[in-house]
Image (tube, rainbow, N blue to C red):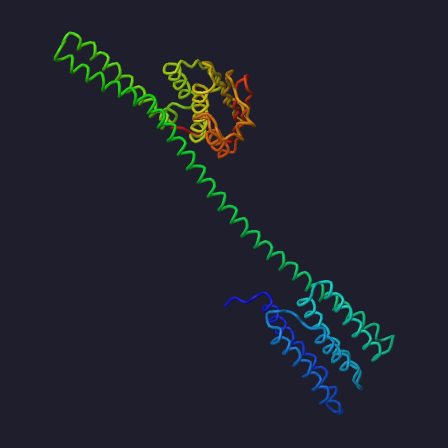
Length: 405
């Protein structure tokens, strides 16, 4: 069974109260035994204990002591303190119980006021009972005890409150972490969907059209085989050329899906191969500048390759230029990659607000590149202005050199 903090405080109060009351009784009652005050003192102590027990039962789990309760208990302590011969100071200890209850049941400011009031009652009773000279010595001792009791209770409450706030913060952090994980998963899914859409467009615009032309050419060859066999060879040559073109386009798409050459030959070689393919297929002249030939972790190399791939695709489709620059610096730390063109560019602010963007240049496409880089602890900055082209600057810090077999 898990107890509430309030219930735990009551249990601690009981554990500390009964030994304290027993110690006071053990020292005080023998002093009253030969006197007629023995049973009245016992009655007052039983009343004090009964009120304490009633408060535990009445305010169980609520910690809402009434001022009436504190006043009654303080009055009982003061009566015991002022009881006739012999003069004793033991009963002032019972005020400590009231101080603890005040701090554990009231706001700190109210508890301090009640603790001060208990100190005043205890001090007044000691001075009245022992006189100024002797009583002041007792007053200093018990005042210090009340002070340290209140200080300990206050520190305990603050530590408990800090722990509670820490637990609440931990729950909030876990919730935020889960939301971030969910968001990251959604971004990955959206990036994957955007990549599939792009490949579908590539297939439709290139390979599908080529295969359709191959079908028409095969049908024409079949017709000519029956009517004019001399022209069949021309159609077969065309069919062979189309099939080679379709094969090249399929290899290019497969290379985009999974560039094995990165793991085998490294980022620099993969970029040179990709630039050559862009020139051969699309006529894009890319000025590729690479400083240093060191290898990077495979996830870093693949991320940089994907950024270049996506950026050059956007140049081909939307920049209205056949020239681009790719500058990769592997010698410095952080590693830097820059892709730029002098095409038509676009207004970034308007682009981010607009819902009618050119196909292929989507906010998701740009954020996909940024997500890849940020996942490696890097940064990606896009700068573009209408008529002045577009530049993409990537920086990724590397701590250790990877080992490649």
